[in-house]
Length: 219
Image 1 (cartoon, rainbow, N blue to C red):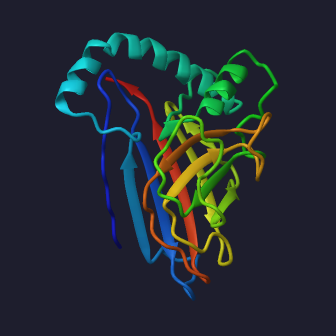
Image 2: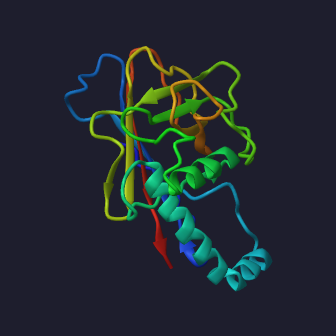
């Protein structure tokens, strides 16, 4: 079993996001333990030098207020109450609009619930940009429906899980995102977040269970 971890955080608020992929090689019995487990802890697409980090410390209080709004909005976006904040990777502009919509119970955007949420994976390593509305891969990309009972919430932790079967998403997983539609990229659908991170290369016959666990805590 291989376990890889990387942890980043911001000043004032922490948005740790764990991407976990359980991998069964071709021919493996998926009812047994996986052949490999990869865990990558990520925050966003920024690595601030010391001078910039100092500047952001001075804005910590402002970020806390902003994050409170985002936390409540994302809870509503998932169709739940007001205790389940979520943030992971880069928040897309259309994702922010979806948060605002769901925050006031506006039905302009679809909820990220079990019936509609998808974890997307693709083979593009293009850096995140807020204007993106989809994964950046040209052809090798897929959106995988939620497993039963997901997304789930435990206090301030949101867990999304999807399983890519033998014939699904057989390419390098270099990016991932959270969606509320199987393919659409415009309202009422939205890409909530996108993250460029290497989770390995899936091959035909392999089964991968992808879990995205997100925690938000004030620091």
